[in-house]
Image 1 (cartoon, rainbow, N blue to C red):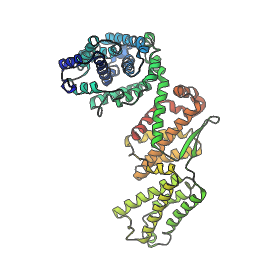
Image 2 (image 1 turned 180 degrees about the vertical axis):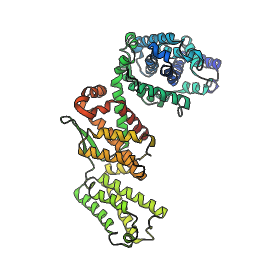
Image 3 (image 1 turned 120 degrees about the vertical axis):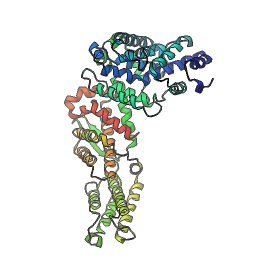
Length: 500
């Protein structure tokens, strides 16, 4: 029977009955764990919105734990290490479901069936069923309870899913995305517990990114019923080590996407982040490059263009910075030259500047700078990588967060790093600035932020417990504590979306 023929409960049962026993069991587990994960925000929203549930002291954490356990158990080889903890979290989630049934709109309105909480609660137990006869009712109950309007296309895709496939196959649909964003907002403003781990974990589940099942299993296998009964303030910090690994992976990916010709180290003795240039080239080459730029600028000292409403004042100012402020940094010189060439081409295209055919000095200016650009790109792989990297559009809605983050990190930097971050923050905030400059500012802030995080993480030598370590040393190490807070997590997510 073809999966495409699965269009209702009866056809699903026929499909599962026709599979070999082990394959049927695994298919049911995929349906249950993935369906529960997909609609987890709709369960969590009840705890965010329902005042009776909040007053009862019930929280969403056992349901996050139950769904996480089912996904982890499906993704590791030795899942038996999780069996006792799976039944522990399932029993707590079931008890919460029974306790809250009378308060929840899941039960009163029937929006998503009459047992949505229970499906998520049972998810871990289904992972340890051994026969299709035991397992199939779990899948049918999940579809009855959590799949609105019987979205069989989702079921069909779940039947084909492999480990690491996204829970949402296309863009997360409006209602669920809004629910998840609302849950995030509530979690981030919860004074009683830090939900950073569960937010990061669920974002990875949604997109199909590796959520480090083996590392999670090590934590989950240690948790018993007493732990889950104590709630999020007790449970959530248990996953700080995994959260540290998530952030490390995100930062490393951003670093790979943002070649800079500069790195950041951490001076632990003085508790300061130090900017270090890595784009050095032989002095003779550098002198030659700067000489070419100087000759390009001298073309206009007494030209007709200079005497008649000169259109390249800003461009010459940029090149002056290349010869002074950035004279020892080939990558930044390349950035300046490339920016000038882009601005020049745009001005010629819209008629704000004569073309090379119309003015010989403009032609010479353009040719010299293009040669400088080619020379710099050819001098080292690092400079070439910087030039070829993608500069994404600035996410306008996040500009204030990006600028605030850059300035917060600058407080922990030496003079060079502080100047770099504050300068780029001002550029990205300036909507009158040209698009190339703002994209370059986003690129550099993202790259430096990720490198700052890596520098401190490496220095501490405790990657898995980096978040805890930051919290402990924050008082003595000043603004470095920024890296342990929700603002940094948000900033890292913005950069990760921009540099996937």
